[in-house]
Image (tube, rainbow, N blue to C red; front, side, top):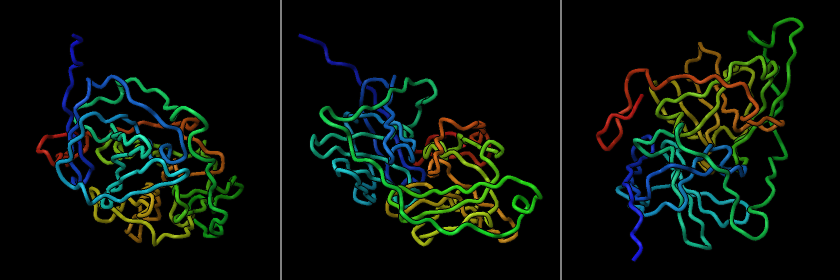
Length: 281
C-alpha cells in the first residue's frame, strides 16, 4: 500500500485581513508563473491546485473577474486589491496566490512557467484599450529641462476601465523599484516615480484607494479587475504619482527593466498578520 504524501498547513491572508484561509499541500518547493496578460500585471505566483483549502473568513466578500474564454474565475479583495484565488471552471480546481502565504520564503522557491490546460492555446490574445488620454502639457521638474528627451508611454488596468498616459524621460533614466514590504510583496508591483503632473488618466473614478502607512498615500487598484495601477499622493504640495510599470503597454516588460530591490520590510511599523503572527513590515 503506497504511503500518502505528507502535507503541511500554511496560513494566508490578504493584506487588510478581510480574507483569511489555510491550505494543506505538500511542502512548497515550487510555484507556477502564468505569463498571461492578467497574471503578469498581478505578478501572481500560483499554488495550483491549492490542495485542501479552508476559508476562515471573508468567503462571500471577494470581488471576481473573468476575461478571455472565461474559463478562469479570479477573486480579489475589494478593500486592499490582493488577488487571492483563481478557479478553473471546467475542472472545478482552484489555485492560491503564494504571495499571500505566511512563513514562505518565495525567493528560495523554484518558479516554473504555467503552460495552461492541454489542447489549444490558453486564453485569447489581449487587446488593450483603443483610447488613451491626451498627454499632459504641464511644466514640472522633468518636462521643463531644456533639451531633455521626453517619451510618451501608455498604460492601463487589465479590463481597460482605467488608462493613463505618461510623459517621461526614458525609463532607462528613471528610478525603478521593487519593494518587499507587506503590501508591495503581495502585489508584486514594480514602481517608478514620475511627477503627478506628467500623468493623465481616463477612468480615475474606477480606482479604489487603499491607505497603507499613510492616509495621504492611497495604493490604488481598479475596482473591476483588481489591477494595481498607481499610488495616489493626496498631499497637494507633493507632485508625485508612483506608477506600477506592470500596467504599462508601449512595449514595456518588467523583466527587461533595471530594477532596484528596496527593503521596505525593515521599516516600522511592522506588519502584524491578522492571525496574530508578526510577518514583516
